[in-house]
Image (cartoon, rainbow, N blue to C red; front, side):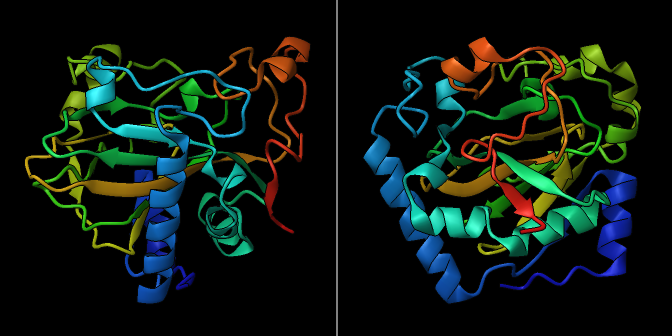
Length: 265
């Protein structure tokens, strides 16, 4: 795994809110992770979340035709756990964000099926059960992510302006620009990335993805990371019912079974 980040990448991430990192995985690692993701997705069937405590299933609404989404695959795949919770990626997300310690929030496979809908502009962190200006996501391309099949787009610098208001991923892909009209003048950047490469982005960086205009799948394996010491903001998101019901506002989210620390180990 190529985990070396140069000064330009770190500066770009902190200024613009995202950074592309080509060739994260070797060919052998890419083959291994692809196979593990395919197997875990197949194992879940219509269920959205691994781990046995969530009942959400795939449907037939607009959102379900944006991508096939499967979460917390690390709980059922040792290979995915090794890649997404390993110290290699853990050190990288800490280095980019400038945060000394990170925990996993959740992982998710995001598969844009053939002719899948575009992914509306949104922010990641406002969906989650903690609020942080330093949350970070990794998005690993398992297939070449291109302009034709739905690569990611960003609004550079949006993380410096965004608060924790958000827009859902719905049919009007520009809803977020009604929440943050100032984003309209900031421009957008597409980030095509070859299979085995990745993109990191801040949890408050505005991003979306185009439609898949091809007859092939665009597979990606992603994860969101939470600064160690983050506290509960009242939203359930991926929290199991038993933990959500017991949580109080301001509780530190440090359950090692649900949100393992990825760096330092």
